[in-house]
Structures are given as structure tokens and as C-alpha cells.
Image 1 (cartoon, rainbow, N blue to C red):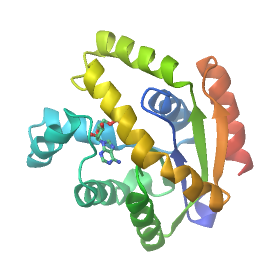
Image 2: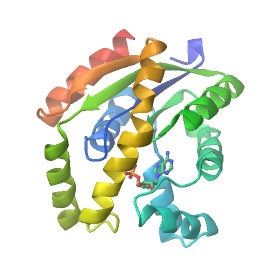
Image 3: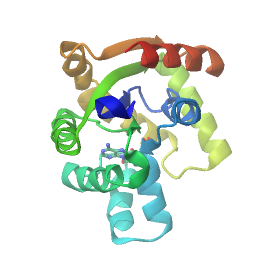
Length: 194
Ligand code: AMP
């Protein structure tokens, strides 16, 4: 993969669609690290950094953390050694400004987006999954009100990226209402073919 520069895969899908689960499986299979902005923010929260404190006020409401802060964090992460061949992006970009920032960043780092798989799941299934996950993981932002707001933000901002990546011939839809292993196999084949 490194022969053609760094390879980036952008996993798209609503909150609860299974991006994290699939990114972790792909990480093992493809040897590319999962870079999940939500996880990075949660790690900062846990370590009580200044960034964590700032992010918390947005995460608790299900709003997006400001782009400048998010992009800076992603830039730092993507310049780490383990991203020398690329990365699997999970939860970033989430709006067109972040998508443009990613393009600039990749131009600078010498990489390109190989493909943008979109894991598609019916909204009612998603809300149920998220409420269940809240019970199991105890994630602070998995209460019903925040979940509904995250869905609203997703519809208002993130779904605008479908056209953005479709226009660039990068978007590939995947049915996400199937067993995890089946979705994984399809993702592997999409990424290998791209
Ligand atoms: P996630 O784990 O991807 O569902 O993200 C949890 C929360 O972290 C989101 O609701 C946002 O508050 C914040 N977050 C994660 N990724 C981003 C991003 N790319 N831009 C802004 N905020 C983000």
C-alpha cells in the first residue's frame, strides 16, 4: 500500500451504524490504524486535558466540537508513526469544512482517500441500538435526548458529505443491517478493489 503513498479509508454512517466495530475489524485485517475522533475526544476527557474539558461541553449535548479544534487533533494523530501507510477514519470528517481540511491535510502528508464506504442502517434500528449501547457501555452521551440531537446534527451536517464524496466517485453504500462478519467481508472486498 505504501508504494502509492498513504491510503485513507473514510468510514461513513450514522451514530450507531457500526463504524467503530467495523473499523476495529478492518484495522486487524488491513494493518491500518483506526483513527476515531470520538475515541480521541473521550481519551482526552478521561485524562482531563484542556481539550477534553472543551470537548465535553459539546459532546454532552451531542453537538460537534468546533472544526478548528477537531482538525488540529486529527492532524496531530495522522502525523504519528503508525499512520505512515494511512489510516481508517471513523467519525471524521463530519461536515464539508472538515472534508476540505482533510483534503488539504492529505495533500500535505502525501496521501489520498481510496474509498468512502457508507454503512447504511434504518434510523429506528439505530436509535434502539444506541439506547442499548448506553446501558452496556454507560457512555455519557448515549442518553435519549443526546442521541436524538446527535441524529439531528448528523442529518443536518454529515449527510451533506454523501454528495460530496459521490461527486468524487468515492462513495460506496453497504447494507449495515446484517451480521457484523458479513458486513466486514463486504468492506474488505470494497477496499481491496478500490
Ligand atoms: P462518536 O464517538 O463518533 O459518536 O463521537 C462522539 C462525540 O464526539 C460527537 O457527538 C461529537 O460531540 C464529538 N465528535 C466526534 N467526532 C467529531 C468530529 N469529526 N467533529 C466534531 N465533533 C466530533
